[in-house]
Image 1 (spheres, rainbow, N blue to C red):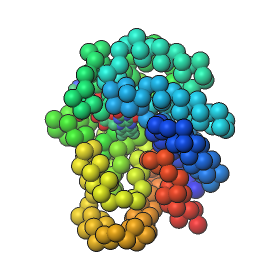
Image 2: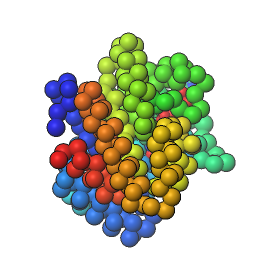
Image 3: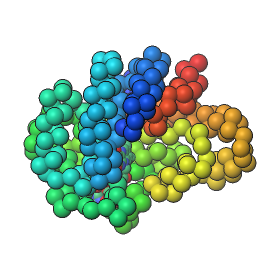
Image 4: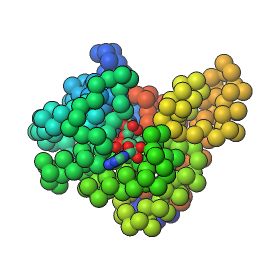
Length: 283
Ligand code: FAD
């Protein structure tokens, strides 16, 4: 599959650290299925709010790399972690041959304590560059529909630019279903001279209630026509899944056609919904 730019797009998949051994086994199965069909360029593993999964992220990275020789990109966030803790974590990743990180401020944990060493992701990007030079390919988060805490669209974009200028190599977006928001974000990057790949984050649609709840929290809009259609399925999970797969496949196809540099799938540790989209994209 090529995009309209003629470059080969990059595909990646995101997991979260499972809480149980069974969850870890299931993750291995999902990863194997995704690998057989898609051969993603890398799998990323999230980092719990406030550093709550610092160790479990590392364990998940080790588990995945032990299963097959695949490229894994841990997420690393700075809220709730000290410079010393992050320095140690970076050293452990370097020891393991990890060379890509998804670098974030992180969600502020509910009522949780927030450390004082870092306040925003641009500071963490700068810290990683200071400590480890060019060792890591650094991904950062981008928000085509704006971050929920943003003071204004302009300041949110300026803050994104700070992360790029601090040394980010590429970005992955929050998921969105409004393609215009992504196109405008890319135009804005071009006008600002930010020459980095901004890969759309893709959220498959499998469950309306949890998608609506999460979208409210993270500031991703579910367009009215999609929301109404999803609501109309009620308990009919099969119809909802089929509609969701169509809508998201169409979004992916249009993004690639317009030149998106790749797609990053938020798999929620389930292979099937991502693979359904993948197969529809590659009939
Ligand atoms: P920042 O870039 O620091 O931005 C946060 C807010 O602060 C924005 O409103 C921004 O405009 C503002 N801001 C930024 N810099 C400055 C500055 N220097 N001065 C003043 N204001 C500023 N969360 C997790 O907890 N774990 C994960 O593993 C995780 N993975 C994610 C992966 C992706 C691809 C994405 C898109 C999000 C992920 N998140 C994750 C969610 C993310 O942590 C939250 O959206 C968080 O609230 C912001 O993180 P950030 O890195 O975008 O922060």
